[in-house]
Length: 280
Ligand code: C2E
Ligand code: CA
Ligand code: CA
Ligand code: CA
Image (cartoon, rainbow, N blue to C red; front, side, top):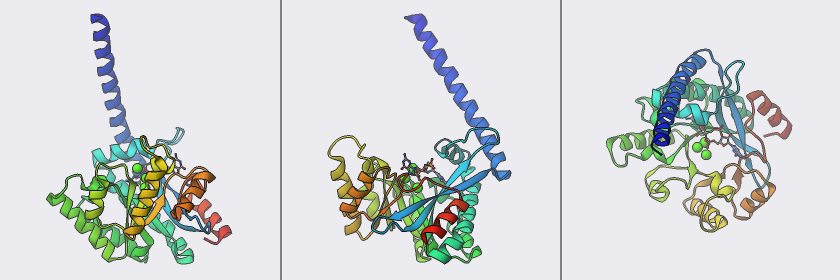
């Protein structure tokens, strides 16, 4: 038993070391990839359930190192946050997304959602940077939805939280909308809703797909949709994969949805073709 215990420890420490090595390599590779413009942005349509019209898209960063399989943002975004690379990476995604979305906004009145991580939101000058990028594309604030998670206010009440709130307020004054991502998964979603200046709730996939544990999943979904309605917020269902999920949402008066059922995230030119066909 003693020998086995020792082996376990050795296995554990070498797994830790391997993990650390992989992260270090990931940071180096990501920095290079960013400089080499090896990253791309894909767009997933947000669909109006009553009409099938595409009203918005969400920008999602993609990284395919040459000759290698793609690396998921679930893996490299946290690493970018820890290493500070999220600043330049996020700015790059924002610029690319606004450039791509310019024509879609002008032709079809569509907005683009950009994910902004907690750390990025705390960087000094972030509000100005976002407003400058909008101005550079001659786009109104209404063309942009900033997607944040409840974790942006984890340090509640502190000066950091106050700074984040000031950033969000300033963006909203310019017509930029704020969406809370993965809504319902945080520890105190309701408390945050009272504090955060918010326009849109993006309902987490766990509720949409009914995979949330405990209770009646449909009841949670219905409650979140009603909460959004009574607060005058738009609700967008994430990760809709089946027609049954889509019609259930429609019955609950959740009118906006995105997910593989409608479209996977696609390249800008593909989306352009899709919009030309469907008329937006
Ligand atoms: P998220 O913001 O919640 O984005 C939605 C994720 O769900 C995307 O994964 C999308 O491809 C996936 N998805 C869409 N429809 C379906 C569906 O029907 N079924 C399932 N199972 N999944 C669906 P992706 O692109 O891998 O991104 C993962 C996460 O990485 C995002 O979650 C977001 O938190 C982060 N991320 C992606 N791009 C960026 C970025 O540019 N900046 C920042 N800060 N974070 C990003
Ligand atoms: Ca998002
Ligand atoms: Ca989400
Ligand atoms: Ca997420």
